[in-house]
Image (cartoon, rainbow, N blue to C red; front, side, top):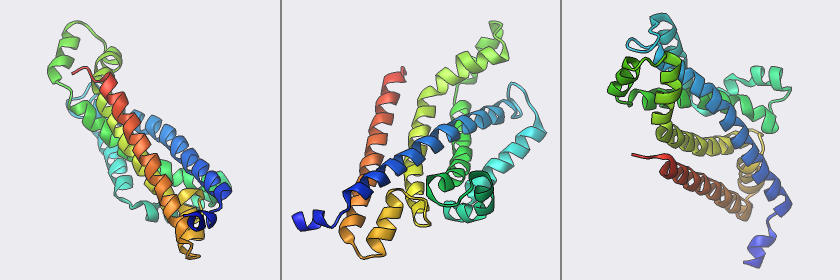
Length: 221
């Protein structure tokens, strides 16, 4: 065991964990905000929504489906020039963020749409009958009712983002994926690869546990 541990650069491992967490948290926050706004717009502009608008709904629906259909590894390469232009580099944490955000925001938008669509229409009609405005229905009825599903979707997306950061690491974005590939697999240093994988799993399990606890606490059904 001591021989196994001696082959690991713990300082590099610590930095890689920090980079993975940073990429996950920053991209998650931005993607949730963007995805939530897009999901709300998608929901309220549908045919039986609060503000029906066929053109906006169809265009937004197409864009969301398009980005969701592109595999993440391909999206990274498609966004290379865009990433270099706005971030100044295609490497490191900064270089990974555009692809991480643009791959996950459409996913969360679709999950928001699904969560809102599952709300009993009778509740919405009752709110309208009591004189609630569309804004009040969105903020006081739709969002509170969909909150458990929204948090669950956020948890799923956070776990997916951890996997995406590992994938992005293979082309130089840093993090545990980069450490596992460049210093583990490429150099046949299996202890580094196994340990990096172990920490990825630890992060995933922690995210799942936290997400489940939050959902359990806020779900009053």
